[in-house]
Image (cartoon, rainbow over the protein chains, first blue to last red):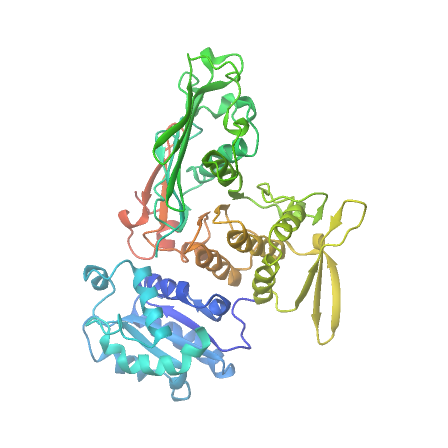
Length: 161
Length: 363
């Protein structure tokens, strides 16, 4: 039965193992009764692969299931233009339900910055969402996500918290 | 957050493939053991099970280990098990050495030691005479405690209530004649565990029901009626708009029985925990879409209290853990002992699961 597809649910498509571990940490902080409304998918293997997987495997299913939300978790590799590059490929009828998030460089930098393990960072991200704070999302490696995060909080927060 | 129960140290020597082996799980609320077939994952569970059996009352050494359990037949070296646990801020330690003098006769106790808060509260060793107990028997199960607050009682109860699980769903029928809080590894006494848990804490049903309704939304009720003078048989009722159906527990699918076991583990951790749970390959019998949720539910339930250890080869389970809480067990051949390293200290090129499939993990 996995996620209950008749209820609002969130798929997270991570670029790599580091992003997957961030997502798992996030999931550990999601309310127990709602944990199944979040599914972390197999890591794609690069931001381009995330986009390719999304377009090939998820667009059609999302179109037929309005309860599905999608987070593309990528590395921005210090390229500010990447957000628009990815968003420009998302079909217009899905833009409200797809969110593009990630570290401004790569997740390893979050560890180097002393924020903890990927799981503890992911948990802190979830805690911020739950409390509507920006303790970790305000970090210089993550603050560029503010716009997407505001949309995410509005739409996804009630699903998971 | 402070974690109220963890194994601080677990050391095994000369038992099967475990030689001078220490499991680095201190401070981790959940841990995954990965490694190739024969690397020693299951042996870790078997070693823990020896301590569990002692605490559950088996005290004859020959009922706990066999001559073939000595690593590579080295019967001249004792098998050692040492465990240190922290229970609500207090350290408890239990250590035994079991030997087979001259490779004949009955196996015997070489050393036995209990420590509480760093202080020795019981010790015996070979060569010293203990008139009340012979050396084929361990003392832990028979030491008289003064009360339930006696530290020896607490240590023994905690060890006895460790959940070491290798479920065999086809053997789980749901019938019971008694109650227990100490299920066996195959969980063939599921019915007794269910009865024992609800007798101990009736409110546990709420948690069992809550979890199961997430994975089986059409679940309505679990009944455990008397079917004889002193025996019970579990029945599960499902209902939808179309009606309802009562199924004997034994008619559930293997995967559904595993959901039931998971529900009891979650409830047990609250009802009489914090508990330690070692689940050998929890992904067995589960649909791929369920594996991640199953493991994450256990990980979440244990993150504040108790400790959960899984072994697995399943990619979804592996992806449910992180580099810090995944341990790689390995050995070069059957003559070499098991070694262990945290995945964070192992070089992995690219995707972990792909590297495992390619056999490119080089600890």
